[in-house]
Image: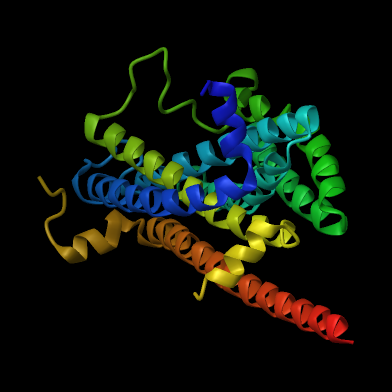
Amino acid sequence: MNARFHLYHYASPATFYPLAGKLIPVFAALAVVFGLAGLYLGLLVAPTDFQQGEGYRIIFIHVPASWMSMFIYLVMAFWAAIGLAFNTRLSGMMATALAPTGALMAFLSLWTGALWGKPMWGAWWVWDARLTSELILLFLYIGFIALQSAIDDPRRADKAGGVLLLVGVVNVPVIYFSVKWWNTLHQGASVSLTQSPSMATTMLWGMLLMALCFWMYSIAVALMRVRTILLERERHTEWVKEMLAGETK
Amino acid sequence: MIHWNSFADFLAMGGYAGYVWGSFGATALILILEPLFIIRRRKETISRLKRQMRAELASSSRNSVE
């Protein structure tokens, strides 16, 4: 059939649920493989940084966690827009499923940043544009989760959460470009699409592999979480009842 | 190929041990705990929904008998 048909087909919760179940082990395995390769390069092979000594190795998780914290927010805002525009059931659930992972990524970004900042800048925290906007991102995630859990009707929770996500999306470019727009303490981008990277090849590969690991991890856990949300929200439908009756696990 | 001379060297991280291992440790902890919490939540949800379904079936069959 045509592409439109397929899209609607997979957007139906009854088809998406088993498909997600098949995809989870694939993404989980990829996360482990990329993670082990990235840790090997980042912790064992990559040379010492001439300015930051061995302390720079924190960036192998700091940068991927920061990227994911911003990217997950954009994906959530995308699903919120789709949900608000087309009133699709699954899109709101996707945003809900991604939120805790996004919040954890924002937390890890701040945590690893503090542990990097202390030895390099002499301070755990500074009210710098980059750090402050990343903290606001963490609050946006927490606000979204709190707002959704305060509303009993899931469809209304999706709408309210969606509006919050779309209003807050302006913060993401602020984080990303903060090091250019303001004179900040935070160093500039380590990897840029327009310039050749300013770091050794093994360092770059280590970081890209860790980024892929975080990417695959986030997809795997979001799919795991969305399946539980699906069961919960669709519990009165036939497909969930049949599945629960059939499944013994 | 390997950058370190000894395992002790590796652990010491050139004097940055607390910062580096504090970062990698917290990350590892979160990335391991998050899926475990999701799996537990899923099991709880499935058993609760099954209980509810059985209760509904039982009450509807009782109603039909009466």
